[in-house]
Length: 316
Image 1 (cartoon, rainbow, N blue to C red):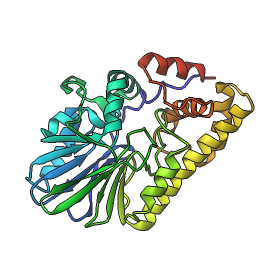
Image 2 (image 1 turned 180 degrees about the vertical axis):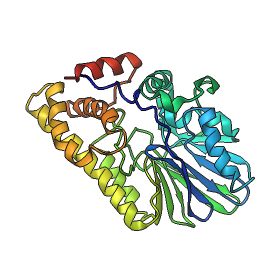
Image 3 (image 1 turned 90 degrees about the vertical axis):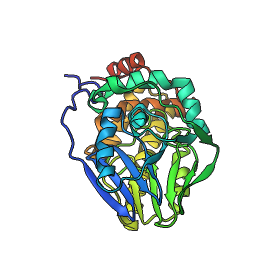
Image 4 (image 1 turned 45 degrees about the vertical axis):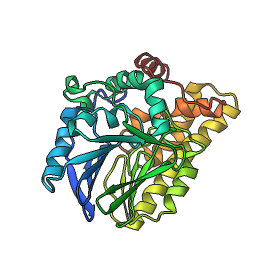
């Protein structure tokens, strides 16, 4: 019997946590669902990733209002995926910030990604009718910029390609805390459907040089010590290398996608099979790794139709 497509069978609501991981720095997490970061400055709040709908963002706003009444002036898009960005309007920010490359992704595949992700994970799109349209940044940058929330500096940096071509991190120097987006995951599968798998580990190396004392990953629990951060970066790197190296070896042997998928599953299931959204991600991950190992540099656009066709082709 074939598995339910992606996460359409995942209908159970997750328990939300809202943890302070540094002075005025918070992690909104929900057992492997997409995380949101909150930075409270002297005069304003910055939100890192927004949830998938304005209604879902309302759950974050409730937690923000439990700790501060300062306005949310900035929303940061760590990268472009619908589950991360389409709730932005709920915060009524002054600015929506992203990398130049993330804006390029919205131009290239914004609507296609929305349609695709809604079909893959409907639970995350509660009250989808509240989404007013695509989320567009109002300000973009190349490699980095600083935003000052009063005296508190937040450095937004594009450290390299990885989860997507446009990933950025948010670094708060006064607390040595990092908000990584989906560049780092903790006991959650990396989604690699739009990834640059050969470059991602090098981007992780650059992130690690900051030696964060705490980190909010894209999915999974907040990491509240340097040891936990190192562990999460190592797990992420191991996940990526196992995926890509196994796929590349199969491609070099001339094996088709379905045989490659079986080889990757054999290599990854014992170590990562219990990670959140592992079964959802694996077919998309192998498809992208297969493309990259075959010389397709720029990730192909996922559409709702391509999703279903690929998934069906890999079922027993």
